[in-house]
Image (cartoon, rainbow, N blue to C red; front, top):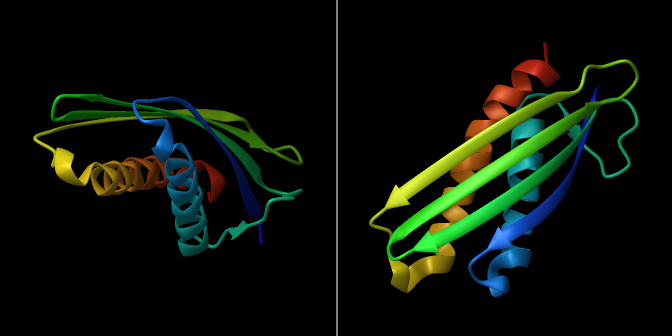
Length: 122
């Protein structure tokens, strides 16, 4: 079974209190999607993929913008790849901003993983 590991960098976020939670959400999404597709998530992966995911999350009024850029480093002769995903959501509930950020980050990362899985699991 091939494995996958992830390093998450939250490069830009409108509220630093959410940084650790966004990092955890992205890691959990990668773990869930990897397992669902027959990959093992291991922090010391040696025979699969190392994903470096950079996140930028901005808020302008009630409009949330999420940008994810991923570099997939293939180990043991596998190719390297790049993936980008943007998600803009208007009309979010700013009174429940943490939930809005985490839910929409999960959706964006899930969609990104769906395209990356096609490379990681041929």
